[in-house]
Length: 561
Ligand code: HEM
Image: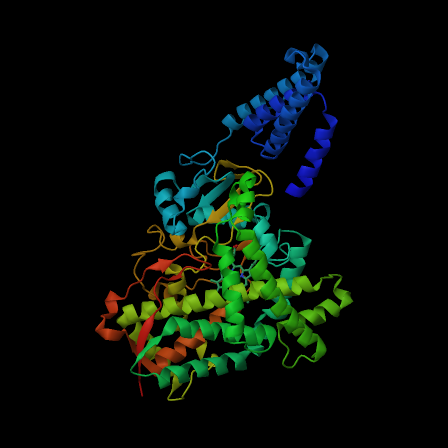
């Protein structure tokens, strides 16, 4: 975008060769920057000033002439002056109409950074605190990006149901384009036919209920392996967070790319994922986007994407060379290659799309699932009453068998309630993924302008005392009485989002979480190491690609029988 605009600016510059015209362009630009905050004009302005000084210098040196000769004649002034006046009029009219608009309440902002400083290291908490003062819909300015923050279930419903179609695209940025092949994935692809078709393929062919069921062996084997490791380390301290990381990664790898790659993938994927959490100045203050280049952020993004790209290229080549046409034992890459070959769908896509989808699936699947597991286990350890009740339910259904299997899960309403209650208190993506308004829209009586970014604080909504009795208590019983669906139809509980952009991986992840927790608490009693009391478990969280535990969860497991 900026490359194109500088070529355009160069062309404009060639048009102006007299000093008088240049001076006028300079002032028109200055006025326009002030009036319209069009940062591209700064480039034009700088070039203009540079060229002006050069012309002045050349002229005075060559002619030893009166500098006043350089100033414009009336006909030179007339046209630019008219343009300038027109600009002022337009800006005035737009200012008047804006003052008539009813924008949501906004905190005071600083020049250039706007309200960026407010976010801090825990944006979900900072925005919660701010909403106590400004209400459930507030308009922040993150740099120059107007950002609407919703903090109530009513506001969430307006955004993700009533006006979902107008608020379902994603923001775009240079760094996202680098990381995701120009946003050819699902999560950051703009709303449109490409995103719709791709999401529909992924939902129906990779993440459907039948497809999820077909991977039951992978889940059973990987969970048995985790239980084996815990058994071997009984009575000594185990890093449960690390155990859950490798469980989620192993399942995801086997399902998506056919086999596990142990540390090879971890070493490539972790630095790649970290790039999504790095602050890109250019995403908020476009005229400072050069800072991202100078600071090395974009170069780093290019490097980690290249490494992951090379890894995925090799994986896809392997799949192409020993192609599985039959349904048996197909992983996600096999399925995507078959869809790509099938011309009857009318939807064509390149290899980059396959790689971007796999990146989404790793990004969405691995961290979210393992983060969830560590929070469920933390809450169970801190709440012995809930742990006991859950162990009773599971033991009764297991009837002495050595492992819990997937068919058992349907008979365990309390387990399901435990998982949901945990997602209420610890949604791994507390602000969901940002959306953007594709046209002006009226929300709860407020005017929201085209291009406004939208965040929904589901972490805050899940702890809203108007909606939840004793909101900070871990009480799964509330989900046994009121069965709430995962699909985003209850706006007081939205860990997977809602509407068109709802997460397509719900079934896929919930079954892993339920099965892993059921087997762990069935087989083991768990306590904190070094005699730390259960209620003293540190529950601090840390914002990243997901909101995970600040300190890894260390446990002592002892066999129950
Ligand atoms: C506990 C596990 C998970 C949680 C809490 C979670 C949460 C979310 C959330 C909050 C969103 C954004 C929704 C919105 O903007 O309204 C999302 C989107 C998405 N998730 Fe998940 N997710 C999980 C697991 C998964 C898994 C296992 C996959 C894939 C295998 C996945 C793939 C995606 C994709 C592709 C999107 C983008 C959807 C779109 O933009 O249209 N997620 N997820």
